[in-house]
Length: 160
Image 1 (cartoon, rainbow, N blue to C red):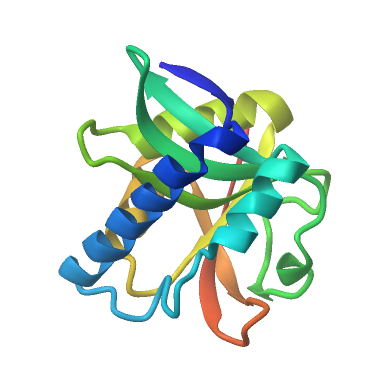
Image 2 (tube, one colour):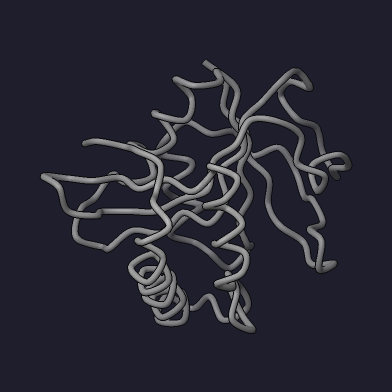
């Protein structure tokens, strides 16, 4: 599988994937994450400008999209719990797949870990598929963080 930066001309495809992701969340009992149009087109345009929006491709076809960057995530400064390490880390946000291939979270997070060696990610309490995927990938549950909109997320970290 190839992972590469997404291109601005792929914005419509990316937004379609996020739309499908919202539908999947609702179907799997996650009614409270990615609501009110999140992630917005404006947010994804900013991800593209910042070079932090990535596509996972299988045989040239898009299999997933995600946001990845190295640096501080303000929402991770305070945690009800404890991070494994407070050293430098990468962050994954907004990962969504086409649903056509299993193991996408593993593939994408392994690629991210190869870039930074310490990776943090969070998800909504109701996002059971993502929570299971993170556990299968060897992430450790670290505690609860509060994101910008004031809602809680479960925080995970993995170090290689």
